[in-house]
Image (cartoon, rainbow, N blue to C red; front, side):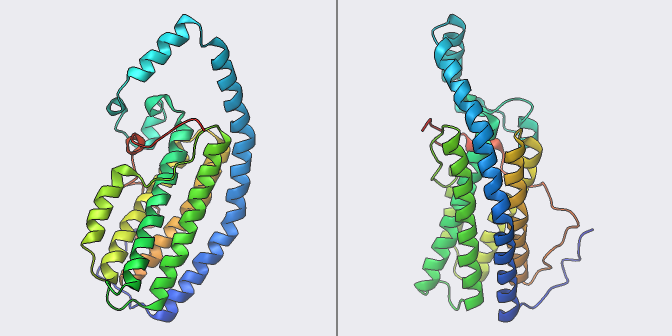
Length: 269
């Protein structure tokens, strides 16, 4: 059921501050579950990855392994299927990187982009480039930025444990357009609209990831973060005077495709 978009709310400072406190409480409640899932993935997937790496190193001299390695090295990044996560799960991950690792890197890069964007918005507000910025809105942006940093750290912790270097860059497939859009922003409404787009992409991507990931621990991480992203979406809609929850079910539309991870620097760490 979709709420009539013509029905609007009139947000107050007190209401936005209260919602931000609720958001912080929700993150505090889900954070232990997220960390437990990270540790679980590190224990199981990390050990499996190390065993797999050891086996590959042992048999690397065989002709079949050499041929396979050459074939993978020769495959261009553009050859990766341009499909949503759930479809790609049945076809394999791009560039020979395990799908769960690709999703972890993709998630980290989206979280990094959110941190970067909220940080830029707060800096612009401090410099007086956004006009009058309600303190409650600034507090929301600060809180959301911290939560995104926590999420990025969780995914990068997983990457380190399974033998990959952390992803510390913003997602290249989205960063350029986001920076271009941000350069046009002149007020709080513009920032909120841009942030709403980013949060909606993240929420849909996590929901899609739940159907694509193979590790139960990875699914648990995505499932613990997705409701927090949806809370960000709801508050931003409220800030914009929109109905906070227009859909009865969280939408999958707008999820970042796995191909947006093609340019990420996946490397053994």
